[in-house]
Length: 221
Image 1 (spheres, rainbow, N blue to C red):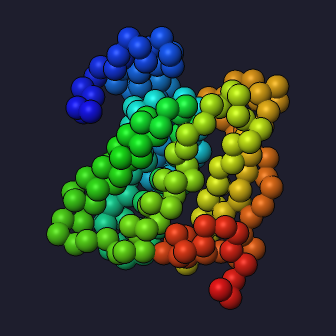
Image 2 (tube, rainbow, N blue to C red):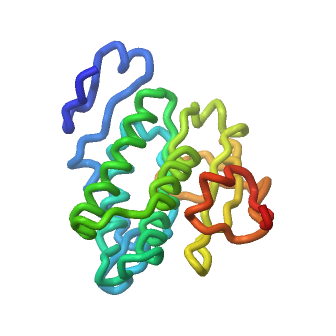
């Protein structure tokens, strides 16, 4: 399939009919995100990277791409160095960004676009230095848990997402959480907190080990 034109709001009429799929234009994406400046880093709060965004019908990732770009704008080598602190900070930006869509093609494209945002950021900021393999596997592990295929309205009781709580030493403590039922959270949107918690890591896990431990981490293994 040919790449979708960046500003197109529909792919095909069939998809509009079958999926009610109409993409939000870049202009509207930016206008909406501009309404919540406290959700992003600013001159007064450069490290504001952990605010949670949930896009319950993310499409091909128009909102997700812009959200991640805005978060990463203050993650620089100058601020965080070139080691694990820098990589962990980028992962924190990604780990607090969630998307759900009913269409598997959209899920794949959303993940691809977020990978591209990170890759472009690293190319600009790290120049010729490559990130670690542990960072690369962590990106993939987070994309699998955070950008998922489901029907948010019909499947809300069964959707499980992973909340990544950052810790010291470039670690995360993960909490496996289900979305609240629609009657408990009738306005699923980009910015709310809609989770109940069925499980968690007992110890912090270094980001480089996320892919090796897809379930709760108890240490010693």
